[in-house]
Length: 419
Ligand code: PMP
Image 1: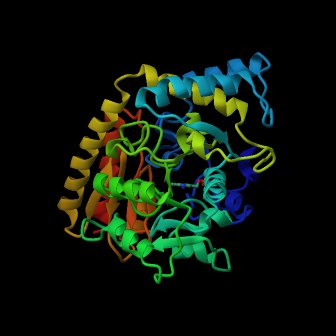
Image 2: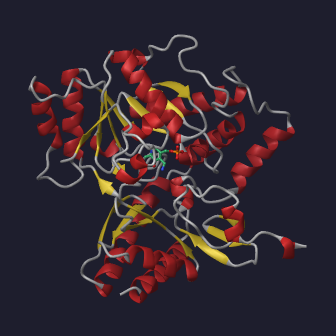
């Protein structure tokens, strides 16, 4: 008898309200790009758990791998022990992702969330260099734990700490804002100037596409010049690929288009393929300065998530056309989004790469109105950017053309209605 059940609002109100969004239904089921609420109403999912569900909800292959593993008494929790699930994941990752790209990394499994990987990377960079500060970029997002927050460039998130999180140095004139603002040149001058007050940092941390920050794209040239700066000054380059990685931009790692080779790469979100929490630090072997006991934790590298992560790698490897499809679908999205923008109002603009797109709606609450209207019509979308002014579009990479277009139709209508 559901009549005594809590409403969506009550269900969420019984939790603390620290998460930013609220969708006024209780979701019950999901498959592919479709979410279903408890009344049976369907919603197209263009949020994908903030890029957690690159393969959509409940992919039958991942489910069957997980069920097989459980039914054969596979180990779920193993602390830091070697398990067959972990070995298979590492072997598969090396064979299908690292080796073909000429990359060599050691693996560090972290606590379940992306921020856990960020914390480990910052700590490692400090230990490896003996330096403290970390350069990060305005509008960058790396998580809400205190270390990650110190390098997150958003006033609202930082304000929630109640005191200024320290350890990060922001570059306000950054390479995400266009060719006129060349941070790498600026940074080189600041670091060379002993009176600048900026000490040589341990690391630079960046996203190649700022996800939470508003879908801001780093250019190939900017990434390359930052890499050169890092090499010259023995600064570690950390690419936070937690949101943009695992195939979202049309290549497994989002930095491949720039031909750079970061010292540390962070993955989480879509790594397990099906939404099970897993996070990973990939580090160049020369920076493995950890000693036993330096960085431990109870829940790291959950075996069930590693089983589905290996299944996701297998799918990525065997579906040779996936990357090409992501690029092609991205082209379709770009074209359609520009049409939506131009048909409705001049102030809208579109940016993105692969299947990671943003519709910038400017100020004045337009994005909020669009998101609410779209939800009423059956489309789940999130907003991002410093003022929550960008509609973020992250459909599953596996979405079919018809569902994609249906979602974009709903968006079109919502943009029109909010004009
Ligand atoms: N880095 C990036 C780029 C992210 O997008 C996020 C999450 N949105 C994080 C780190 C933090 O991950 P988590 O929320 O799992 O801690």
